[in-house]
View (cartoon, rainbow over the protein chains, first blue to last red):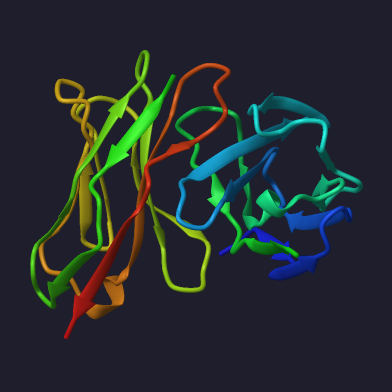
Length: 115
Length: 113
């Protein structure tokens, strides 16, 4: 069964550094998403992306964050000037379409640790 | 805005016991409802879904019915196994241009042999 893949599985970065989290969505999917889960808290939506544009973003997704689809297969989340509170598990997801009845399929996540 | 309230855990059961995890939601209109499961060390996997009132989603022996009158989507399984030990998340997605999933806090279930 096709799956969403994320790399790396664990990233350790010094505070203030930039980090790029990578995702390969399912190949025929058109909508892409990033979520995060801070330890002990809910899974929170960050951003959705379609047709090379952000379609929706949360208040968490400020100027520190950006997303990009640099080629036909990868979808990246960049965090500039990381802060301690950015430490979390980051999940990438994709869906075939934007219809609300379409499930989003998740990767295994990248655990980001900011020191 | 949309929100999901999920039964607090952790829940510990013996094998073959009956499992219920309560989930209620607040949303405008008619959202789609989902249950996701996270096994240890893995990502979120879709377990089942229901997209309109009175729909029943089912998978791997789990069931949940979309109850509009009580705004609920409780997850049930009649006879759990050790392999069902995981974290279970209830989630909803609104209509139209609302692309995000709103998640409950997750319920940790441990099944003992």
